[in-house]
Image 1: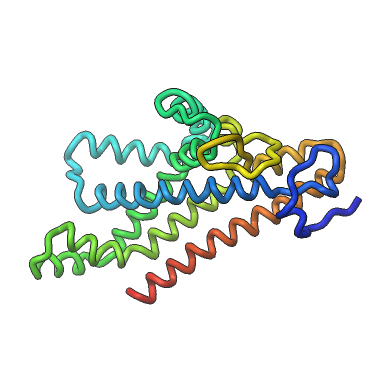
Image 2: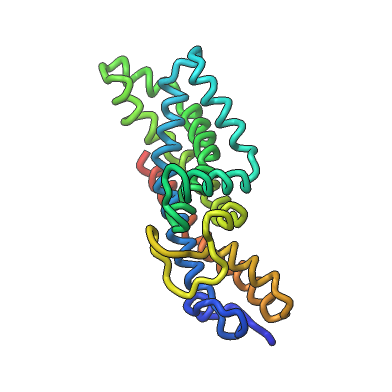
Amino acid sequence: MALGVNPGLFLNNPSSFRPEEAGYRPAILGTIQLIGGVILIIVPLGISAATYLELFADRTRWYNRIIELNIQNLAGVPSIVFGILGLAFIVRGIFDLGFVVAAGSMTVAILVLPTVILASREAIRAVPSSLLDGALALGATRLQAVRKMVLPAAAPGMLTGVILAVARAIGEAAPLLLVGAATFVTFDPNFWDGGYSALPVMIYSYAGRPQEEFHVLAAAGVLVMLVVLFFINSIAVWLRARFERTW
């Protein structure tokens, strides 16, 4: 049976026995909510951490050296380890959120946060020091100079880091399997309540079925995921271009 990319892929619910009627609607909505939560977490935390470490931190302090070392190390940790961490402390443990989209967003955000921090630090380093020095010479406080001069100039590079982080986050399946991304969800997910699914998990499920029709459906799902990724990244690229023009 030949299956192609059609509106049903975006509008229909998944099916375990009718590939011609199966779609990715709950997984698409779950992925959009998941990535939205990730962005809301990594942008303020990543930029704040990069700004502190690059412009305010005393590098002779032991705790700042530990933070720097951990950020470098976390960038190379396998994603499944973050899934175990999310299961232990976010789904259960301290936060006890349960198997909801919010738990998945927090877990994936921890996974990609080092990417945003490292890219943001490089963007801040690329800003000429004369901007900061000139603002300080004119009487601005260091915080005002950073907020008004350094961060707007570094914003395009920071957004590049966010784009890279989102591109990685949208394709992660291993940590989501541990924090509740169920294979088949036939209802629209809620960020704080109920089960959810995500595109990588659904594609993996279809690809593992013996019927050839589901393999074709999985391949079409990859195209759907690319469309969602392009939509999300296009917004970030537009914001980056806007900051470049205004600056």
